[in-house]
Image (cartoon, rainbow, N blue to C red; front, side, top):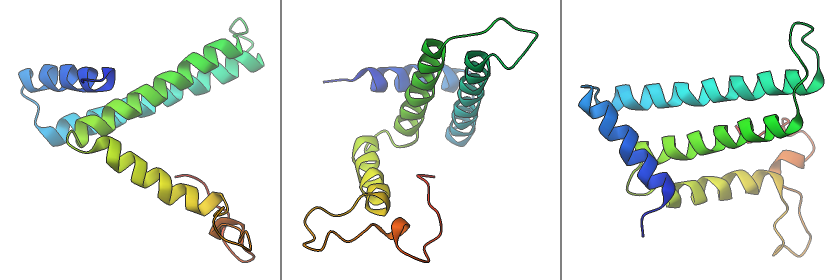
Length: 126
């Protein structure tokens, strides 16, 4: 069954291919699209906090919508870059990142993840 993300990825790839763009150019532009959407989310936060005196205050609902746009764009980007295994790759990456932040429930001692151990550098998902 074809997912919405797959359909979007195929549509954008077909559009860019028809414009004569190669795969690496398409991927580059798609990654830049993530940055654009992230900027819009940041602008929405500024609006929700009312810190720009030149604009009317926004809402956290607008922030939520912009964050959803970031996530959707990122999923489409990964699918365009890895059409055959994006879901499996994402699951693997999530497992790797999770191991750094959540204790392993199967460990009897409940060892802290690497990011929480003394001397470990502060971590993030990126």
